Length: 162
Image (tube, rainbow, N blue to C red; front, side, top):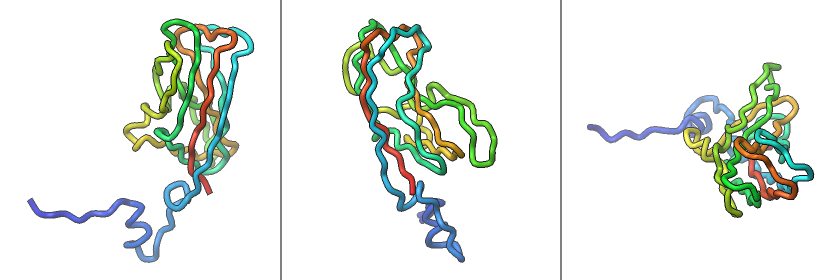
């Protein structure tokens, strides 16, 4: 077996291709942005109720899943939640389906505590690229139990843009 010296697609674009192909800022030299959120449930909600926690900006945005954190204080026993996105329109005008568990699936919130998001993004390096006309709404969904009055969720999403 021979020694191989290969390059990532982004490295090739910047340093090997002539003329250079510019990587979008969401991939190279972009700026980190934070979307902080707090939520206290105002009315009890049944299973499959959701909470819109943030809206990522329009354009090309890369969510950095493992840098996103969530503190959950839900009082319903055996509760789990999913983190995903609402349906949106991409930059070509095509509809993109919602995915209630596209970022994280089945987070155990039976006990109060902090959670690192992004487990559903393992195959893409714990990142998700969104390209949208109007931005993308990120949601938490209670998949199996009711959300009780006063249940709390606090956290932040980290993404790259510019």
